[in-house]
Length: 524
Image 1 (tube, rainbow, N blue to C red):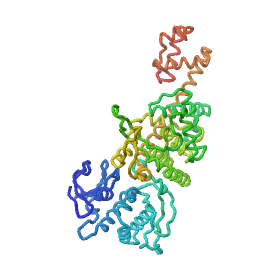
Image 2: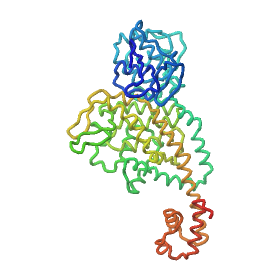
Image 3: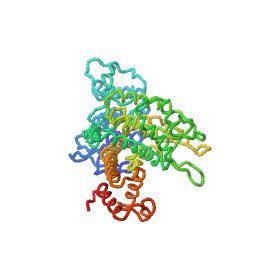
Image 4: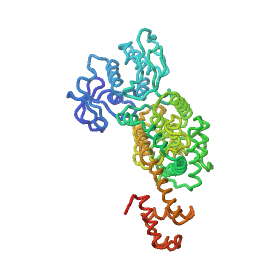
């Protein structure tokens, strides 16, 4: 790796990652590396090729050589930093975590120098706003602007935003989709834009309008229980039907009550049936997800929860951002991803975080009118079907942070964080989480709900046939259908000799044939 005077670095390998070709690392990646900032690299790293070509490959954005930010000996470090930040804002979007680190890495004198470069330019105004907003400090050398038109803080061709509010001092529209204490950002990837264009909510509504009301009610009841059981299964639990039904009832009420601290506490009480060994409400000690060393009991974290001293501040920001999202015309699925995954990353409770996290997905989808109150949208079932991808998107956030969170083991083999980590939970990129949730939503709409509706229609057809031909009671018909389903359309010898001994061989053959025609599309 060769380094120029300040930031740009020519390399074939960058922090253990193989570049698609020899190129110069620029933008946020270059700044993080050069300043040795204690934050993860962006999911996608910008590089400038020695050739005149532009493309994206895996985790790299490759730009032609004409895009290379100036970084020479004649520039001061602050001047070179300005050029790297302008490049990043143009092509990578906003990285709040990096900007926050810059406010503490440099002195106020240096920050004033930074915003004095091209002082009325749109990118300097964005930099100026972010420094003052994130630091809570007004740069005294800067006077309010008067004669320029407003520019949006977030470039909406790069990242999702809200309508925003004007900052007259900077002549910037703050369209960040969050607040100072909780503001995840999502990039406008081709995958997400394609999903939004599909208008899945409308497709779902049209499909449901064509379903008989009684079928829809029965499907909702079954899917409610299915989703509840899936939420337990994701965490390796196999609850009794009563416990699953109890949580299913809570899911069925999603969207009815607004989120608040007390509402989150109420949800935790529904999740934790026996609180004898759990401290309820927000944690008053460290937390992690992972294992313990079998010999020493030492924690082996896969995810380290937010420092308990930061939880109230983070959850205040979380709830303020929730209200901001509801008031703005933000995409429902992306909103659900930022809120639900943000909650589980903070991990504010000792126990119950996972199920409440998945409840929040239901809640936001209903609040944003993507799904309908009373008609369950079994997204947890889709997440269970995609359990490996689910783990990957959780790890994509948690694993990189392990290098930057300092902790020590407590007497009870817990973790105690010893450095300042609050910003990791305030400002993160939720793009992968949003893409994953959209995958699950698509799976739910395209397969899980239609499959259950189709089954109920088929079951009613089969039930009517059995009632007409054999006058069998409902309970026995249900048992018959279950046995046939378990044995690929054939009634077992045991069932013939016990529960259905009153049926003769011809009747059984007729029933088996009808079952296969109705449920298995077997016309033979």
